[in-house]
Every structure is written in C-alpha cells, then in structure tokens.
Amino acid sequence: MIRLTSKIVAAYLRNNAVATADLPDLIRNTYATLVNIDTPAAEAPERQQPAVPVRKSVTPDAVYCLECGKPQKMLKRHLQTAHALSVDEYRAKWSLPSDYPMVASTYAARRSELAKSIGLGTKPRPDRTPAPSDASEAATSDSQPQHRYPASRWSKPVG
Image (cartoon, rainbow, N blue to C red; front, side):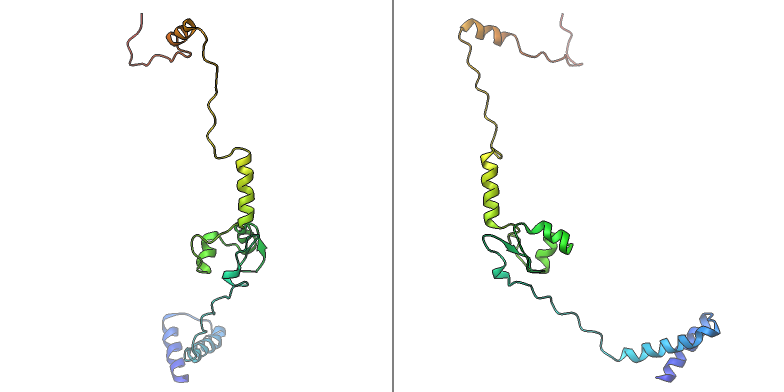
C-alpha cells in the first residue's frame, strides 16, 4: 500500500506544484483513501417505517401523517409546514395510490354541506321578470333594442 501511495503522490507532484508544508497532508490523505477503498461503502439507509400503519392511517375523523403520526383533518398544509413535502412527494415516498385521501371524510362532508347550503356549485337562477301585459308593449320592446352596438369599421354607413 505504501508503494502504491508513493507512486500516486509522485505522479501528482510531477504535474502539480505543492508547497512543502502541504506534502505530508497529501501523502496522508492519499494513503487513507487507498486504505478505505477496500472497505465496503456504507449501506443504503433502510426505508423509513411509517409512524402509523397505512391501513390505520385513514379514519372518518382524521387522516394520520405517516411521517410523524399526528392526526390531521387536512394533511396537505401539515405536510408543507412540518415536513416540507408536497402531496405528490408524500404519496411517492410512502407508495400510496393517487386516490389516497388527504382530508378526513367527516370534515369533507361537513364542508360539502356548508358549500351546498350557501349555494356554491349551482348555476344562478334566471331572473323572472313579469311578461308585458299588453301586446303593444311587447311589439315596441322587440322593435327597439335595449342596447345599440357601435357600428363596425367595415360596415356601410347608415344614412
């Protein structure tokens, strides 16, 4: 190992200028690197285990975070603030399906009821104005438009 270290350092010194004070460090670092080549690299870290089993992570009242085990009504904000994960990253990390819920079902139902009660998601109802009582009023209102559009620059002048 020492012979190989000396050959590598000599080849390096032929092509690079090194201060004499730095030479012992260069030799020491080269030798340490060669010794560590034989040792196996650190094994990849094991896959992180969820704090809560995936099957038990979804209940009607809460969705449990697999990172920390805390129950949440809405998981998206918690993932962003506490773990700096997006929903897609979270699902990929834990191999969750794309339809894995991020909101507790009772909370979603309550929000849905609230939205329906205030009329969200429905088309606006048409105004029911009373029809003209006289036929003459109907004829005059049809003959004169409510709004007159400006003439097009390609139209022929009226007059």
